[in-house]
Image 1: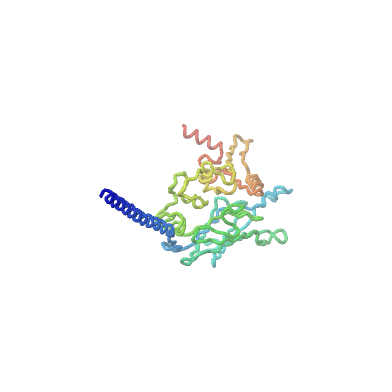
Image 2: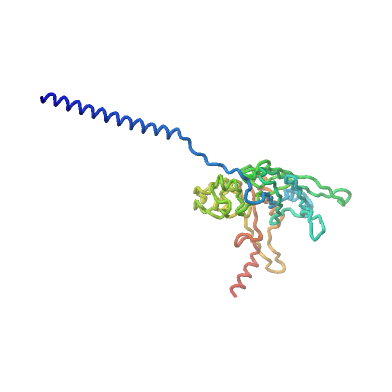
Length: 355
C-alpha cells in the first residue's frame, strides 16, 4: 500500500516538473522571439522638411566687404613717386540674370560714374540684394574687378582692364557656397586672393526670423525654431553663439572648448576669433591684428608721428603673399575699445575729463 502511494506521488511530482518545464519553455521562446522582433525593427528616420523658403520671399544678399589693390608694394620698390597715385577701379557683379556695376551711382534722378580711387576700400561696404524664384535651389554669383589705367599720349585717355574674376554657387538649403571660394579653402571662406586684387565678401539669404540661418538648416540640422531669432543663443554654454558656430561648422548643441581651440594655429583661440568676427576674423585662416597709436605733434618742428597708409599696405601685402591676413587698426570706425587712435589727442581728452 505504501509503495503504491509512493509511486503515485513520484508520478505526480514528475508531471508537475514536466509541466513547469513546458510552461517555462514557452515563456523563454516568447521572450527570445520578442527580442528578435526588436532587433528586426528598423529605426524610424526623421522626416526631412525639404522646403527652402516657406516663410518669406526668397532672395540672396551679397556683401562686398572690402577690396584691396595689391600693387602698392611693387611701386614702393621702384624709383620715383608712382606710389603716390592711387588706383582707380570698380567691380561688376553678376547674380543669375542681374548685372550690377559698382561705379554706376544713381542719385536724385541723375546717373554718375564714381569708381573707387584708393588702395583699400576697408570700412566702405556695399550690399546688393537679388530676388530669387521661390524654392530656387542655387544662385550663381560672379565678381569681376576692373582697373582703369591711363593710356595714350600724356595719359589723357584711359583703358579699363579686367584684373581678377571669381565665381561661386550659393546653395539656398545649406547656406554655403562653392566654386572659386569654398568653406575651409586655402585662402579663407568669404575671401578671394587674386593676382591684382584681394576681395572680402559674404553671401546669405533673406530669412523670416532674421538670424540668417537658412530655414532648411534650422529644421533639419540644428533643430532650432525658424520663426524665432536663435542667432545669439548659446544652448551648449560654451560662450559662443549659435550663428557663429553654425557658420564655421561647429555644433551649437555640443560643447566645445573654444578657449583652447585654435585650428589655424595663428595664436588666436576660437573665443578671440569670435570676438573679432566683425573685423574679418576667420578661425580656419591665419589672421594677425595690429593696433597703431599715433603720437600727435608736440610742437612746430615736431610733425605727427604716423604709420602711413603706404607702409601699412606694404606690411599687409608681404604677409598676404604667405596667406596671412594682417589687419591694422589705426582708428577704424567703431573699432574695439581703445583701438588705434592718436595718442596725443587721447591724453588731452583724458585731461579735459579730469578737469
